[in-house]
Length: 532
Image (cartoon, rainbow, N blue to C red; front, side):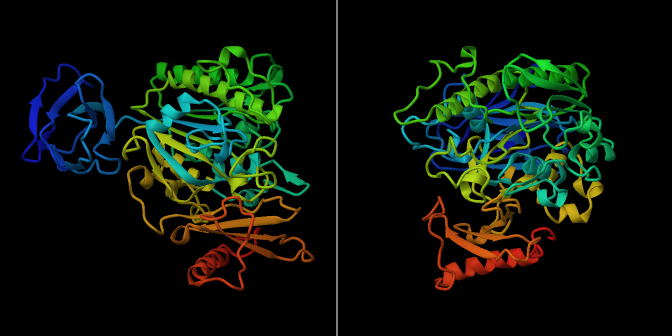
C-alpha cells in the first residue's frame, strides 16, 4: 500500500484492502481550502498501477487523473499529484489497478466520412438540432482526452494507408487527385500489423470492417499482415442490409446490417482473445456513415428515438445523422465488452463530412475531398490506462494521421525505432506524450498530405504549432509542369471556412512570420509533393 505526503490540513481515512483492485486509501479533503499537492510514495518501484478518484459522498466516484503512477514514470518510487479545485469533491481515493507487466489491449475505431462539423462532442453551439445524438461517444470523451486539431487525408483509402504505414499516402501510391485514383497500397510497405510481428508481439490482432487498400480477397493478410479480417474489401457497400462480406478471405453475402455485423465481429474477437488470455489489438473500421444514406434499423435508435428532420434539411443530411445515431448505439454495445482499465481506445474520423451533409462552419466545396478544414479536420478521442491527463480534457496540439503509426505501436509495447526505417520515423511523431500532459509550443507540426483532389490538382496543407491560427495550402501538380503552383494562406481564427485568403504580398509581421514558417516546412519536406 502506498503512503502519502499530504498538505497539513488534510485528514486521512485508512481503509483495509480486502481484495486486489479495491480501495487502498481514502483521504478527506473537506478542510482543504486551497489547491495543494499530494505525494504518493512506495518503498520500491510499484508493480501495479493505481487509480485516483474523487467523490463528495463516498458512494459515487469519478476518476480524476487516470492511472498512477503516470505512464512513463513507473521507474520512480514517488508520484506528485497537484489537486485542483475541490469545490464539489470532499474525498479522494486510491484504487489498485492492473500490474505494470500486464499488456494493455488496444481498440482503434474509425468512422467513415465523419468530419469535426458533424461531431456532437466538438460543437457546443451547432446549427439548430443538426447534430446527432451520440451519448456513448460523449461518455468515451468524458473518460479520456479529445483532440481539436487532428488532421487526415481528405479521402478514405489515403488516410488508411497513412495510418497503417506511417507514411504520407502519396508515398504509398494510394491517392485521390481529380479523376485519378489508386487504392492499392504497395505490398512492400511495412504495416502496423507487420511491425508487430517483426517485434515478436504476442497480441492477437484483427481488422474488422472497411479495408479499402487493395481488392484481393487475401490482401488483409498478404498486404496488411492481419491475422483475422471480417468486413468490406472496397470503399463501402451498395446496400447496408445486403452486402459482400469477406471472412478471412472467403466472400459471401451478408444480410446483417453492416454496423451491427462489425460490432458483432469485434465483440466476438475480443471475447475469444480474453478467453485465451491473450492481449489484443482490434482495428474496427466502420463504413458508416458513408453513403448510401438510408434509414437505419429502428432498433438502433437512441433513447427517445432518432432525431427529427429539421426545416430545410435534406433527406440525405437527416439520414446521415441517423446513421451516426445508430452507430453510437452499437458503440455502446461494443464498449460494454471493453475494460477501460486495461484497454486503450482511440476513435477518429477518416476524412471530412461529404458535401451532401456538411454543415456550419463549413460549406460545400470545403468538405470531403478538399484540403480545407472541412475535408481534413476530424474528431479524435483517446481513453484508457495510457491517458493520465484529467478525464474530459481537450488538447489543441497539431496531430496528423501518420502520427498514429508510432502511437499505436507504442501502445502495444513495440518500439517503432526497432522495426521501422528512419524514412518512416522521420515522417511521424508519436502523440503518446500528449496523453500524459506533455505539450509544448513546437511539439507538433501538421503536414496534411498531398492528395487534395481540388480542381484536379494535388495540394499540400501546412500548419505550424507556433503559429497555429494560420494555414497554408499549396496547389500544384509535380507530375505536370503546365500546372502553375498557387498558394492560399488563411487566418483560421477569423476565417474557419477558408473563404478569404490573405494577400501574401501585404502581410503584417505576425502573418509574415507564420507564412515563412509554413514555407520552411514545405522546403524541409522536399517541396515536391511526390518526393518529400
